[in-house]
Image (tube, rainbow, N blue to C red):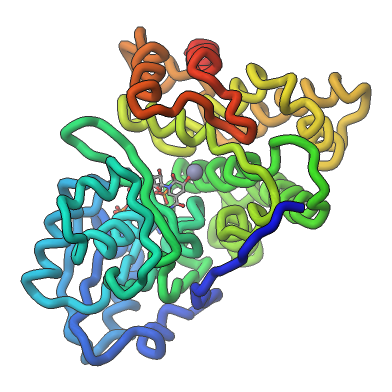
Amino acid sequence: MNNFELYNPVNYIFGRGQIAKLAEVTPKNTKILLAYGGGSIFKNGVYDQVKTALAGYDCIEFGGIEPNPRYETLMKAVELIRAENIGFVLAIGGGSVIDGVKFISAAVNYPGDAIEILKQRILFKDASVCVPFGTVLTLPATGSEMNSGAVVTIDATQEKLTLGGSALFPKFSIVDPTVIASLPKRQLQNGVVDAFTHVMEQYLTYPHDAQLQDRIAESILQTLIEISPSVVENPTDYKLASNFVWSATMALNGLIQKGVPSDWATHMIGHELTALYEIDHARTLAIIGPNLYRVMFETKKEKLAQYGQRVWNLTGTPDEIAKAAIDKTVNFFHTMGMKTRISENAENIEGTADFIVQRFEERGWLGLGERQNVTLEKVREIVTLSY
Ligand code: NZQ
Ligand code: ZN
């Protein structure tokens, strides 16, 4: 097992009715910014619950953080925080609002041009320079409620870039599984596929001796496979909803990544598809993931065989199991409503592979993945296979 540090300071508050606990965890002696998205929180009662819990607090609102949050929008919140001297931000929403708030938290006191945070991948380790924030999660998918990473899109250049660092963990996250009742089926399906792929990015690499991490990863995959066909049809079922939400958090709160190699090439390529064509994040993963496993088969086949055997109960030779495991994954994504080709999700896609390869080259991303052997040529092959 590789050496590791496990640091996760998030006060994770889970369960029915927990939004009422906001008053116990939100600081009272400062102005609060309530940050949210396009308005779903007004229709499903979450906004009312937050306002009731924070009665008497000095709150200012900033709405309109879009899916795949935009740098340009977030900078308006940064200006508001500076002008109003706001001391704490509450993100109310899915991964986009929470990620947006992480960027805002980092940008307010950033001494240079805040776009550098994204372009130069500045790592934030000193919490004293970031504005503290908490979250009320409304969409299980990204794990953003319990990790310190974020993804922000620069509209002007159509770039989707990451930021993060140990200073960007939420102070607390309130996670009430009943809030998923109002999610459209498409978003529930997206959540399942995103969480599933997060596990795969940290598990489907090469054999190593971190047995417990493997077993936890496989358990999350099995739980998602078991509950997802029902939860997307019936999100008001508390047993299903609670298991779904917790699985999505566990998929990307850092735990299964400790001591093991990780991949993340599917995400890096997928982000380009969202930046170019606005394809939902999870849908880009369903397109790219299986083709990456095909192109990188030789280096991933042992772990694919373990996955096929333990998660899908497949039998045969290791190579047969490994290949069948990829097909099982694609089938699973199809049952989650995913269309696994770029051309089924966007138009005028000629030149996509060349464009992505050129971008990666300009950024110096010459070798991605757990062995840095997803070269530019492999990226081209994966994207072309995905047309
Ligand atoms: O904006 P509102 O009106 O709130 O509507 C949202 C949005 O339209 C709606 N929604 C959210 N909760 C709802 C709801 N509608 C009804 N009822 C509810 N309870 O759902 C739509 C999608 O929301 P969004 O936040 O964009 O989805 P998601 O949570 O999937 O987040 C996606 C973003 O997170 C990034 C993605 O790249 C993408 O930008 N990711 C963040 C990660 C992280 N921080 O660790 C890791 C992931 O791999 C991912 O990259
Ligand atoms: Zn993801």
